Length: 264
Image (cartoon, rainbow, N blue to C red; front, side, top):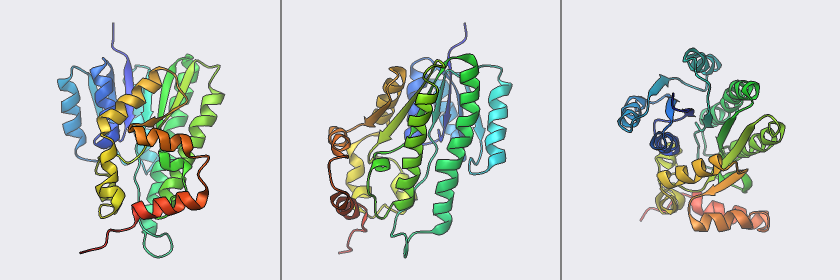
């Protein structure tokens, strides 16, 4: 009997890599995709855990690349049991004067458009089978006032809203939808988002390890939960208080975390 099959986007590093790792450890075969050359190393790592792995390098910002990946999924001839739609990027800086428009448009394309595109393919297959589980990687920032990460936070609010709506639409179709909401996590995200020289990019990210975040996400997914704040206890408390803390206070707190450190 074949192992169950999971699909993970953005699987070459960070939370996506660890989602795939946790699934491999739990007996899933994998279809993984990412743009990075590190995907080859990830594939080897997961094979060493006993998984059958299919890896597809692709730039998910491009519609034709998303379709190419999905065609590969179909060509395996195996239905997906799990899909982790995870790929995403960020950009730091004040929107009007500091951040890169090109990077922010890439955020919209990858975090929002490709998420919709992959989700359309995945939900059609799973709804037709009346079975499947989908994990969307949102963020605790999806519920925050987030100066210096305005477009990133907005993109993750989009992902969270999409996940909640699809959860309702698919509730009678045998398909569960879960939103993973990490906080600052010790990955390369902050350096790539030009937030390496900030409080959140140096101290804050030490709150959570990506493997622990992934474990929380997969366990919530398998339990059919609506969402999970992952992983630090402080983050779970912060998430619970999100609707109570005034916007102005949230904004001031986030601004302090995302502001560049003063050079000594």
